[in-house]
Each structure stands twice: as C-alpha cells, then as structure tokens.
Length: 150
Image (cartoon, rainbow, N blue to C red; front, side, top):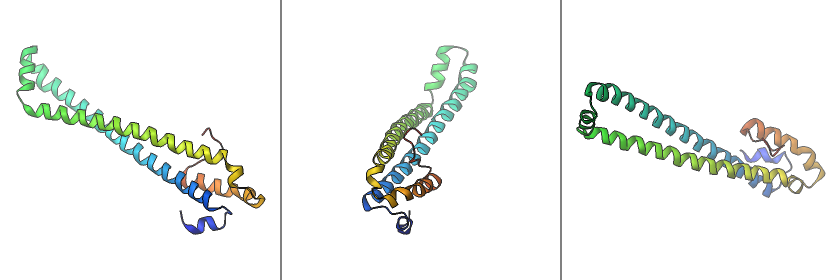
C-alpha cells in the first residue's frame, strides 16, 4: 500500500497503522493457509502412495503376517519413509494451528476497526469518504470492513 493511497482518503496516522496491520495479518494468514494445505496434501498423498506400495508389494506377495512383518522391517528405508510421512503430517498440523491463530488475529483486528469506525473517522468529511477506503480494501485485499460477520 503506497503512501499516496492514504493522502486522498482523510485518515489519521492511527487509522493508517491499523489498516496496514490488518493487511499484514491477512497476508500472513493467507501464507500460512497455503503452507498448511500444501503440507496436508503432501502427507495425504505420501500416506496413500506408501499404503498402496505396502499393500501391493509387501502384503499380497507375503501371504502371512509374519512374512509381511519380516519384509517390511527387512528394509530400513520403510522406517525412514514412515518417519518422513509422520513428520510431514505433524508439520501440516503445526501450520494448521498457526493458520487458525493468524485467522483469529486478523478477524479480531478487522472487527476492532469496524467497531471503532466512529472513533477512527471522527470528522464528517472523513465519515463520508470512508466508503471509498472500504471499497478499495475489499477490492485490493479482500478485506471487508463493512460488517463483522463476513
């Protein structure tokens, strides 16, 4: 967001900082959301591929439970793959929790801006012009400052 963007919108420094903070929190939330989805897809596809491999190459040819266990633990690469899969699953959960926290922080700040809008745009000219800012925030950053429940 450029400095000139704020010049024509009749807002004070506090409001500018709050708007910049809500934009940054939105970006952080979106970045964490992408990371979480990516790691969840990696873990899911990895577990699925490994399950199919184990089923087709180890379970079916083995015939017995003991032969399967011996074939599975006979190669240490299977344990490394499992370690990698569980690590990617854990990382996906970790980023999901961070994503949820970032989303909560974003929505909290967004709602605070909405609730304090009468204090942030005190002058009549500011109040009349705020819809331009709200429309721009919605268009450019997909941040709704009109209603809390969105």
